[in-house]
Length: 68
Image (cartoon, rainbow, N blue to C red; front, side):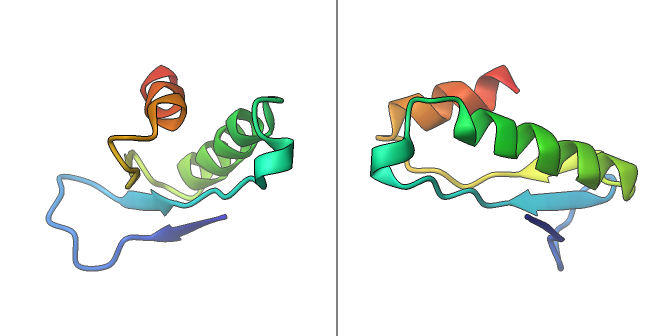
């Protein structure tokens, strides 16, 4: 669920996070739970930053990422 972002110029270890939830399963908290678990695992592995790429037009996901 996470991978080191190779080649990043950051101050510390960075994890790249990608989550996909099927349309029929959205708005049930699944994405939030996946992000929480993946972020916790990445922190345990030493990451102190996260790289998340999301379309600016995807308001629900932008809000979700900002809350986390």
